[in-house]
Length: 304
Image (tube, rainbow, N blue to C red; front, side, top):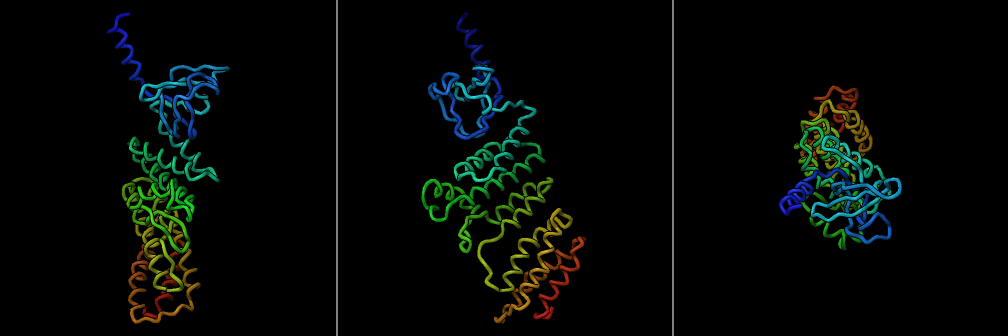
């Protein structure tokens, strides 16, 4: 065989499209189809590789090639098949499986975030993009919950948090890290034309705000307006409207004895009460009137 033909074959070989996806953490690629064979590489979740051949008893192993040209063997159950047509479905199935697991360590949850970070730019179809954005938010939330407060300044947590300092915040009262509400809203606005936008907006409500109100009524109303009010303004007929409205009568009942001692308290209360009441009035949900009645009671002391 001439060198020119050999080179052409090599180029064709290297141009093959990946067809297997690593479906576990730290999967070892070995020099032969055996657990005792030398490790060629350790592969993170979601690594895409080219399948070269299958082998071992019953085809239990598959030989794969990395993008850098190295190749090796790994158990076939750890490398899922995909085609260009099924790739998004395979990626999403793997992400959902990982999100559904309980008890994962911080490294496992951070690995899932990194995996979604890598594949999101590949998702061009709008509806799929919205779903992957929601998956990323859920993966981030899970990873943040796994950061132990006492170890947050140590490796590996400190560097991970520092790299995401513009989108995360420490909530002192609950001693937990959380996503910033404005960061979630930015994701929502990028995906606002997708069916996932409703769930992204509600995730922002569930995520909450840092700090605590300590019995101060204007603070509770501010929080309700920034979270539930914003959800209602953006999704007045959304899937979670009833949930958003239900909390308002509860808020009114729970703060019935709250007093406002400062001269500016009424002004601060009305700054949130007025837009929140408008957001509730714009809905057509069953709980609309009870919510409006509850807000009316909250404003009685301020002449509203």
